[in-house]
Image (tube, rainbow, N blue to C red; front, side, top):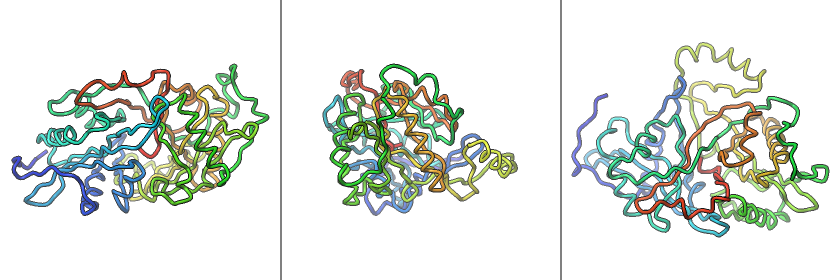
Length: 383
């Protein structure tokens, strides 16, 4: 691949501003190819609008070529307040690391790393998820390159886009002690009178999970941009003796985030119509036309006690049913391999992505700060 030589004086590393929105959308949408499919992860109509779903406070940096005014690289490293060891603290999350294809291998990552080191405070580390097929990010961040923060691995994660179930029966693995008396559990659609209970339930779940955002569901009524694409009635609550024991929200993110098909390998394009017919029959994910985006519901705040496997499975079955009723039929969620609920994924149909969850830091290893008894929770807006 040909590259254009540029010296450091032609480059400026700076904070991203709203005026950069269009250029950032173009840079973030740099295509990637996986399994013969060329994808573009887009943030339309506004990069900063999409960022408000991820961060309370943005910390976006970019590299600009002063001679052409072109953006060559960027990253996001803002924070949101989360429950950490049962208490609310700001937690940073790194995402949208991009380098223009023509300028890869020209030490731009070192320049971004220097900027991150200057601005990453309170806290001075961040979380990051790198999926196994993201080879560029793995090579950049997990190999200890000079100038970049040290990477500290936490463990495996799985994102499942669920399209069906391998069996109509509940798996034997769920028939264990400690399950709820499900005959006493009822499902209701969230209403304003439940909001205080929803907030308290999230706080209660922080006994078992780390990194749950400190949700305030009253912001749903105020149309807060963090909850864009969601309404209160998108949430389903599971009550036992009028106490919430489980919940999820069915979330269409296509208004601000899209995974668009740009190209298929000729062999995939040839068989796509036949594959889609078989996929619908088998309960699998269909392949969109070129230029269209995948349709799915992300599951917001998919929460219950980590050992309540029957309830977790039941919520997924009802979530998929509701998704189908809305003409989608795919639900997506991410779980840690430390989460007992993750072992149920083996009984589900769908597309599975495996990756690593870890931390980046220029100073100390942050892992000893976290209570190992708590399971990492992954906030759906950030994946």
